[in-house]
Image 1 (cartoon, rainbow, N blue to C red):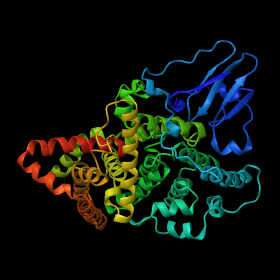
Image 2 (image 1 turned 60 degrees about the horizontal axis):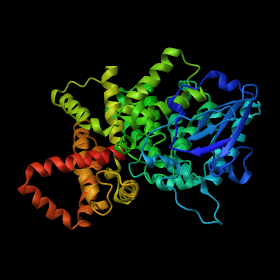
Image 3 (image 1 turned 180 degrees about the horizontal axis):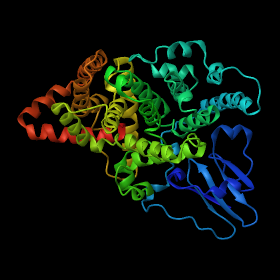
Image 4 (image 1 turned 135 degrees about the horizontal axis):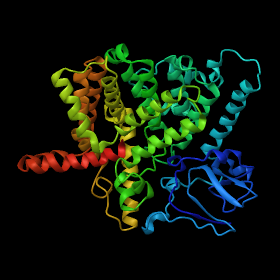
Length: 490
């Protein structure tokens, strides 16, 4: 067989035939291996997927993989062409990866070892081994400090970076499981513990942790922020358990399998996802489809009536699609109109769902509203991702995306524009809807963080003076640039 690596093919966007599961053999492979066959045990931590095959017809079918592995079999299978731009030979899985020292042990390998230990613990349930309350299946995975942090998971000062270190890089799994348990959703919806565990692990692994910003830690941070919003009086008194379940799942999966580049980049490089979704909410559609693929793969809701499962998938998509920053003005105008007319009735399911959409939008871009110590780290990470994309665009002579040119922008200038034209309008309206201590705290941090970045950007005052002489340019160009940034950050 002959292999060639191209852009990632993301099979969760395609239906997986049921007969695949009945195949008689399998081949696993590693991204660092150029040959099929049994991988070196030292490479198991980098295993990317598997191919299921049937020796009788000499064909191959991949079930699930993170990379695009093109196979040309002995019977003349010809891989289809995806895109025509010469840059399309890049592998998004290694786009933001850093070289590791020869003597270092990859952190991902260590996490896999811990995951294997957790798998053994979970499998005891299947073997009928005696156990206590199944809701405590993960207790052995928490160290004392992580458990103490989870007791304050509703605090707006929650340090997700510290929590991720304490959980050995498994913050998304532990935090989401804890919240589902805390709300009583596991028992209420009779979720199978092993299926839930597998679903959360697969979700976390499908985030590209090589991305400086769009990774599992960001998803965990958004999920924690969503929890804070769900506890606000107006929402806590009105939302149903079904609404809470949707909100947490949407937060955990809202950027699933994000490639670390924005939608315009996918469009101008003729990526197949852009063609698949007709250049409309490309990333958000893929995040949703990927989440649905994992739900079906793990059969997390297979015990529910078919209508309920489909309803969960549809509403999950509606929430994730709302994070498309290109539709920011549409959602914000609708929210503002509801507040002006005072006609939001949370007794109506459609209004509750709309409020959940706005809550997820706020959670997705809430980094500027966090305390400076946390907000600054997020700002540096997202700008690093922008500039890395810009460097690749320069290298391949592509048009550089707005805010991705490290020579024309600074972290401070990028963040000031984003806060002014995207974050402030959204959170001002959220404070009108939910005028609580949390809302005032977020606006307070936002103002302080903006002032801090302004102090680090001496040119900011000069550019604002120019804006007074050219009001049209000051209101139009920064706004469009900020929205372009948001399309990457959300």
